[in-house]
Image 1 (cartoon, helix red, strand yellow):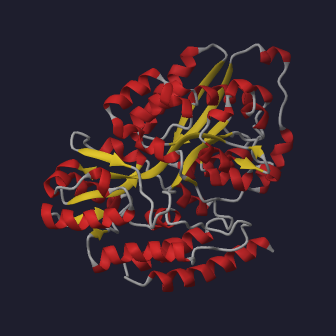
Image 2 (image 1 turned 90 degrees about the horizontal axis):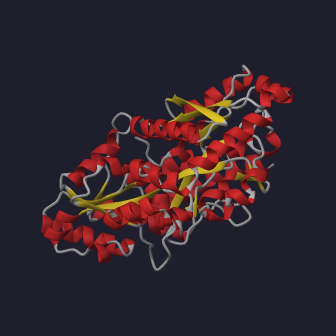
Length: 435
């Protein structure tokens, strides 16, 4: 099970070795004899069991659909390990033709770094129809105006609610999740009238708090990217709102600690077992929920601001060492995976957000959404979401925000105090990389 937190592991990117950089000059050329053969390529990806099985199925379908390319899928433990192994593969001249990665890798190793292949010509080809991609997912795949990655599938955090609990409390979902102020009011009513332990569950960590700040008119950095903006009033009031709900009114709650994703599943269980009315979680949670009594809603705005929670996408990228034939084969596979039909299939089976707007017009997806409306909530939210924040300090700012969130959520420290101190640390880290 993958959750929507891939931007957190970008802090652990491993630097490309000198050996990997040296071999970039050794890109081979195909002979005429080779060009007539079926091209075999490897695709490396780090997915959980259910998503991994569906990916294997799609790869098999692609291989059967044509006779020019054979894709061999090589499953890795996770996204981070995939990138580490790609780097080792570069050094050993055994890198895959294409791999699934975080857009932070694209940003940090595309362009002048010379590690990733420039895909601009392929992406801008009329047949690929790049204008059909959701803009929120394409931004982080560009470096200096060129594409070094292509969005494969997205995620964004939405609200899941227990219909039985809301009905018992006499709460309308449409009204309850219209604004964050309404969520707080509904949480109080749910606790009182439905007798639950909590009204709404905030997922532990900075993500939910950051989404609230962005939906309160906030931003991570100034427009020119030179100043940290996490101590603005938009951030302070949003985080203070959450602190008060957790500690003062106790109408919202957080489950923290445990190994791995234990806290995440416990939060889901609290809503599934009617111990809370709703929670904010990943669009990838769908496989763990019973939609006979669970439903979904978009995250709302705050203080009259438009809802702007983050949406991010995993990217497919090609090492620059690919031969032209391998690169063409890899992009043929990418184009297949990004077709509206396959995007719809992937989203219906796994729960992630399609990156193509035209997926809504695919007959199978359209039919599924008509009987499973919750399926399209994350897709609709992504259309007006904020692009994923790519930390220019390679993880220092995101680490600072993680620590700040713990202080507010777990230690009951005032948001203003915490965020002003965090902003000073973050600005120092930003200044260091801008010198």
